[in-house]
Length: 289
Image (tube, rainbow, N blue to C red; front, top):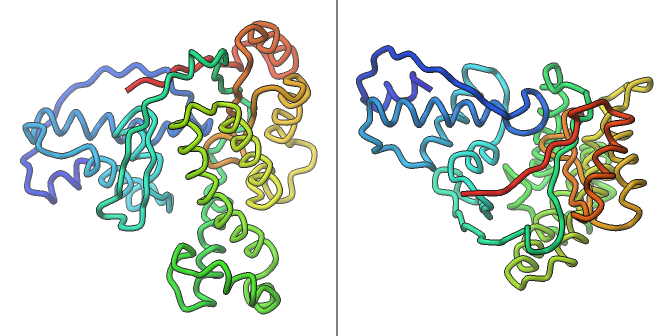
């Protein structure tokens, strides 16, 4: 972070900072992005007279993680952390993403939002995460494009047999998820703007199911005895009994799941989850900003 500020011409100096966080590390809650944004805001305030925008701080965070941490992450986590609140982001132009704030009061819907810690840690899963965009880009490359958003979905399905041979079945399934999910995000935004919370929950469940089935970011390759994320999702589905919604949160493979639980049943839900996954595994969330 400091290097990126220095490259922009800001004169830096040392400082002491005492930091306290409630963001669980290695849990799919974008803890690295949150830390990057925190440092960015400190540097911005101390040495840049707050001249660096929230968007640029997010981009600096991505740079720091790509170059200095060696993780080929995108920009979504950093942007959400930096801009804050509930946002709809279009990354068509990465240097100038289009960001729309969405004002929605989840509390009035009668549901409690929570994250459940599966107990599996993200720490050694960089290769699993990197394979997802790499495989999608392999599919895009078959059509002479750099990224999948530039590939016509009709062409993709028309040439599916060829793409399977060129990129492999898992890459094809992940590409299917990409096309579906981009549409689904827009439908989720529309549902919230129309105050159709039931439709929103339905899309959350659809997205979670597709992540498991198509994107395949629930269980690391070769894991058999330990499938914490799959178990957590299955447990939450059972406890919800068709109400609310549950899906993988963050990049998957480890970390947390996100659940929308009827508020009147949340206390029992939390207790039942804790009986299997351990005390303090279920954390209530509130979206602010």
